[in-house]
Amino acid sequence: MTGPAPHAARWMTPSDLAAFAALLVPAVPARETLGPADVYVLGDGPDADACATRLREGLEPFGLRVVPVPDPRPGVRLVATHRPGPPATWSGAEADELVADVRAERLGHWAGLATAPPRLRTLHRPGSDSTGVVEFDCAEGTFVAKTGPEDVMLAEEEHVRRAHDGGGRIFPTPRGYDVRAGSATRVMDAVREAGLVETMFRRGQDGLLRADPARLEALGDHLDVLTRWHGSTLADGEPEVAPYLYVDRFRDLPESEACASLGARVLGRAAYAHAFETPVLLPDGSRADYRELVSWAEDTYPKWRPVRSSLVHGDIFTSNLMRGQDGEPRFIDPRSAWDGVAEAPAGRGDPVFDLGTLLHAISPMVTVLDACERGVAAALLPAGAPGDGPVDATAAVPVADDPARAVLLGRLERLTADWGDAGVLTRLHLASACSLLGWLKYAKVLRTPEAWWSVFLAAVADLARARRVHDGLGAAFTHDSTRKGGHPR
Image (tube, rainbow, N blue to C red; front, top):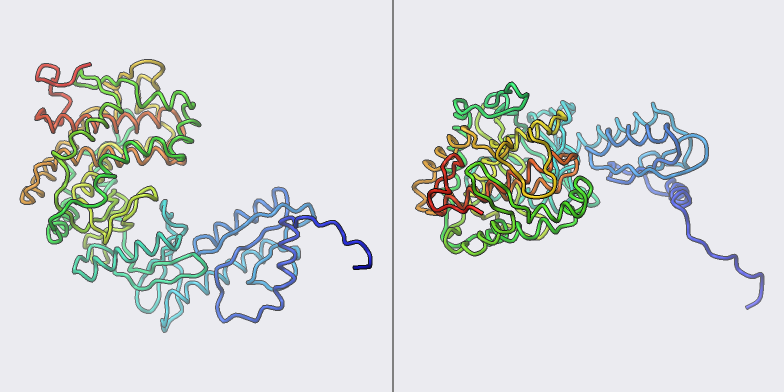
């Protein structure tokens, strides 16, 4: 071969790639509808950061992704299939026009054949499994579009439709399902908040929210609907997911990257590892450490394991208990998979786990979350975050016996009495502990040592309560187990 030597090859930078993609955009035929696409924000400095933030807030709830790209050229440029042409300096007004275009198209698509133009009502804060929750009006009524990863949304849609088609109308009525480039949207009837926290919780002199035992009746119709649904779908056979949730998760989750990285950041790597082996002094005078209690659960599992399954929600929390348009109880955000490694096939699991997740919400997780959100998590541990050596949890608010917890336990025991399941009360506390453990991977919530220890000690306390109940001692720590054959150390 003759001719000049080829130029040395080099990798394209993100800016090169974005500019190259923009040159191809004019050749793309006009679209009838807008599809999900990455929107590149090219630029550096405060203006570029502000533009990216503005677009994230406006576009991500509707299924688009905003990608900042470092670019030293002056000005801020956008590369998006929605605005064909080479990248050019864009103003804030033009960015707002892009947001308006996308919103109008998505609302129109979700509304389907509505005879009246849809109207955006409000944006709700998305949960951990979604990127956007949009409430809008159209000719057919008021709907909600929930957008998130395709695998998560598909599992949720199948779960809801299975319950709905089987007569278990506990979820908002599903209205449609849409997938575009890996981003999926569930459309359903709108529901409204039940206001349970405002109704049931009161702020004490220490500034912490606590459930009022006299006001737990506000849960009544939700619990009645839920347990009737459980009871009507009960079938013999151990749920496949039960061994994971009641045993394996306690061993696996502390070793997971999400939990370990958060623990190392908040406590330090060595202190995090040591916490799971540290003796904890509980209010009944007994001592127990996390590893010991998990070993007990593994050894005794055959004695209290679930032997029947039902259709389950999977993630009962106060924020997931809603009201329909006529005030009827409704449940949102079901879960059928945990930690990416365990699933409840066909939506079937242990109904007691549903009830235990609600138990952990009422006592103590609503209290903990409120304290964390307000920046007063230290109030949960009046003696301060533990140091080296055994941990005295006797004064920790999430560990102490809560009168509301006893009232709720009594209600749950009555509601499940005809299930003929001797292990209900043991598993209620274990499910609560398992749910608490799951919070140890949420960096947005547990930002201080006090917050981390509050949740961890509450999980240890629930494990200890489960062992007490199994041994016939009762769940309340005020009972002196050291004189009744308990587990002093």
